[in-house]
Image 1 (cartoon, rainbow, N blue to C red):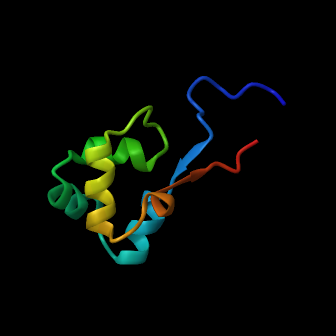
Image 2 (tube, rainbow, N blue to C red):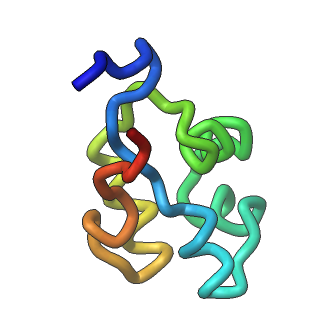
Length: 77
């Protein structure tokens, strides 16, 4: 199996899908969670290299979801 690119950790953030399902904007989530739109956008676009547990918990609380709903193993090969 070839090595993954340096910025591909094999984790996919499903934030965009969850926001769409809930009819919520990134701006509204930003207000609810207390995290900048830019930081949430990095997460949404799978460019984040880390996430604080407190941020993860706040996002899950705001979206009424579990961590497994937000983060999953990427199907990219």
